[in-house]
Length: 217
Image (cartoon, rainbow, N blue to C red):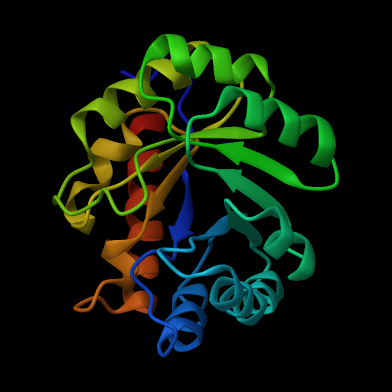
């Protein structure tokens, strides 16, 4: 039982998007309901291609009231006028430097810390959030068991918010919400080839609403 019930908010991760469908699918997803932020993932693009990708998406995301967070590219984040920077490689020194250099002008978050000890060390650098789960690591229907366990442990004892990367099947969202994570990220479930982005975001928000109503009774 969650000791302090919360309704998680949705985060989107752009990993599956191609350059051709990025704007259409992102716009559709943002039309589906509440989205806290969008993590814009290079996903193998070179620096120039990712710069162009980020510059196309950031204004759409911000216009919808969500935070646009660029992954692993400080220069692209600055040029695209993003709201934040996410570091994915689990590098404590780089995280500490980013926090010192960019907060509070930018949201600074991180992932890649895969043990409790690593996560606590990252938390000592005072990022705005930590994410549990790897970009592109949502091929299975449910969230990765290690990510679930870390998110549940973290949410119970640490005040810094966490994002849990959910699975590819929206039917598993309750398991993600039950961890107590403040945010649940979806990628393939919203932007995969077979997904309807707007419907997926609508379904995710309805699931979170129903979950919160149930645990608050």
